[in-house]
Amino acid sequence: MKKAVALRFLPTADNAPRLVAKGEGTLAERILQIAERKDVQIIEDKSLAESLSRLGLGVEIPDNLYKAVSVVFRYLWEQEKKGKSE
Image (cartoon, rainbow, N blue to C red; front, side, top):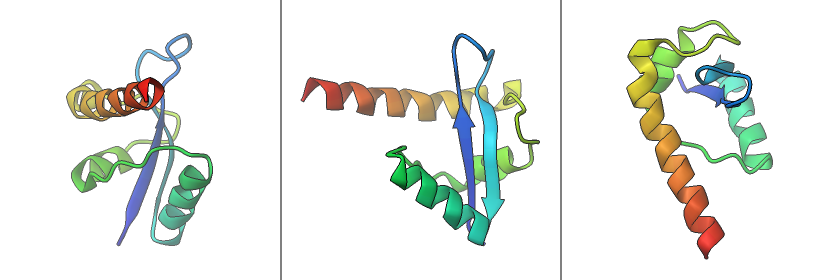
């Protein structure tokens, strides 16, 4: 079954990224549709989604997931930087 999670990180408000949405099946599809409509880049990582889906909504990610999430955020930052330079 498909899973989807959404993270938010506001440097002025958060110490770490927070889980702001999660779901399976139809709800996962809805999360992805909203992300696409709002031009949010989607990264597919099943094992990370599985780990994050175990967290409660609004919870900052735990220390053991920092490295995996930082790889995703770095990739997104690099893609955004590329887009601005083109």
